[in-house]
Image (tube, rainbow, N blue to C red; front, side, top):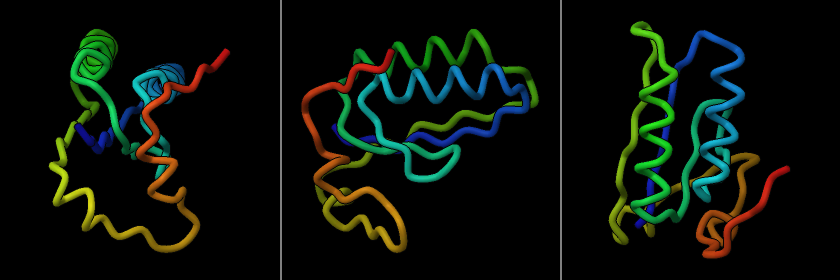
Length: 95
């Protein structure tokens, strides 16, 4: 399934970890705190559990599932990754 993940995190260390977890889930960065792409439920659940353990009460974390129709109607303008990069099925490894 396709997902859009957005967050607002005050702690710089936690923000860096959120980026890592989103990329590990197979998502691609659209903006500083917005990621989207094709990911399986297990990876998203892991991302949610990591975020739940690290977020402060004032932080925000949002996961929006997108069905195929919503994904096909996604509009990307400006300097953004193409939809092909967002729809990749192979995970990217980050070291």
